[in-house]
Image 1 (tube, helix red, strand yellow):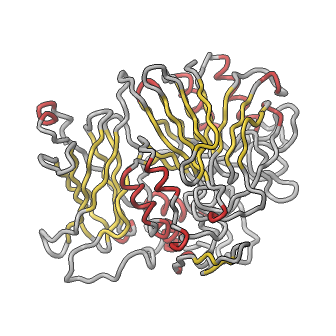
Image 2 (image 1 turned 30 degrees about the vertical axis):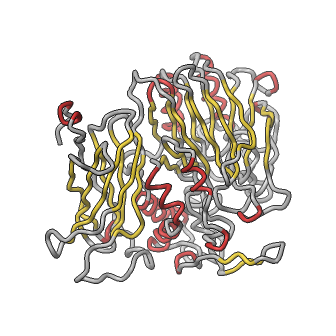
Length: 516
């Protein structure tokens, strides 16, 4: 497709370019993910529409159909789609579980746009599905300064807490949508592939939590179809579907997309699994992740997205290159959970960034101790407040290199530990002094059991400015303690404000950081 044409823009149309969906076939299409195929009927879009990884001039748009068909997309500034530009996208096939993505290109920056998706039958030319519509806001261009707002959380449908219509479903997504963010950062555990659901759970007050249950959510996921079914299940929730259609996403994965606390090369000793090779399970999980979310499938999972002169978002992959979970006290600088290439990329891109704020999306927190059973550690920290050791060595290198290069405005956002908190790190309280003070904000869970708080490791001098955690482990969504965070950057002053919010959107705590 040609690049954006100014005269066309003045007529409210947009120029777009295509991308393809798919991935290698590792198994059959997701069971229970769509109504039965009726050859004589029109195609049906089964799980809504989503957009993701939006830039100043492009965006990914996603959908899924109930049969093979050609994905068709229209995009316009106008909600009535008058003068909209149309794009013939990829053919949706069983190889990709009938999901598909299109990369829209040549979009105007900092604009709220409308898109409409249909699928055309391959058997009957001109027969198309009913359309589904969505909206997205493109990022500001390099020189356009404006307000930016986004929300983040993680941990969706965990610890046996599924979609319970009697309790309002996953209403946190309605609350996030009502803040009208420019985008949503999902900080991992987008699904719980290792968390089977039962039909009912009796709550401490005697009420009964009744889960929607599908076959794929009735056991731990092992096959590709079962991993696909984890994502299909979450989109049964009306609040999540409406949110996904209205707010572009940035998704990263953590452990539960595969299974709890996994690392490459692990061999399971878990009787629930017939496939014990974690690398095999991770390959199937990653294919389902790529198929069912509006994420790019080319290149590494870590990436940088820019939102004008005020914000760069650095999305880390703290799972693909992770070393085995042990005591985490080694001195080997070649080990870690980022890996050498990602660590060098992060340092290089942070130095290159001219954005006022560099938000680092780390799905595992830095200073929070996350054990993996007795004697082993899942995260960066291990509880020893002394000099960096184990995986702390990687982050000591990142913090030291960026400090010496004069990098400012670094903020870390994470989830994982199922409570919300604000942690300030300062070399005056740390075992080392060669870094610039920074904040790490924790949010979640979105819809899962609430836990915490965890202990803090003193190596980098963290101090808890705020913590909101439940009094009882695995407090379900009905008990509160579900959280999301909101970040707003003022386009004029470039001050960054963080609100830590509850499930209904009420602000529990906030702070404003002046532009460095």
